[in-house]
Length: 230
Ligand code: FPP
Image (cartoon, rainbow, N blue to C red; front, side, top):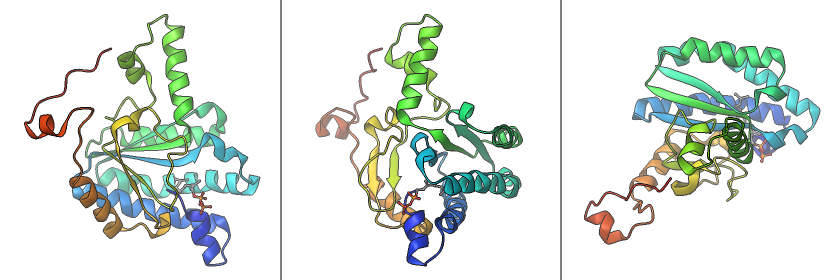
């Protein structure tokens, strides 16, 4: 969800106003995904590296999260959205941690859409914590064991990854899970990413041929891929 800061700067507003508008854009996007039958949506809200931003912006983002949770959870629940937070909770204050746990509890029975909010998250952190968990249990580190130990093990790998804001990089998002995802880059700033922009991304995705290492001929013949080696 990149581009909040630039959106604000273009309007001579503080960066936090851009993040605040980013929350509105997220709300719109979640509703649009529910309406379109998307079953899992994962968003990058705060990276392990975002701690390096000015203190005022970091504390502003924590405050926005708390406010958004208090305000949005009832409606998310009504829409059948199950909210999960993914990331290192150790680094978060107790009140933020409690807010996350409360939102998860309030929505845990919902199954229409799983909204995973990556907060204090990094793809490298996730791979390292999964490997450390297996090592601590004395389990062999295989692909399938790592998949099960990742913080995002509750949802399938993403079919489509969308990055807004014009940059063409993953910036430590879903490094493991995006191995075969289709990558869509939009020049729109996140607050401007609306239903039409989402539909454009979904239309583009619908035209992709996903081969997962196979040939076009195999895909067209409808052959199932060989199971991955553990
Ligand atoms: C990147 O834009 C965006 C973030 C670091 C924060 C994303 C957060 C939201 C969309 C709000 C939702 C989050 C919560 C708290 C629920 P940027 O600031 O890097 O933008 P820029 O590249 O234009 O400066």
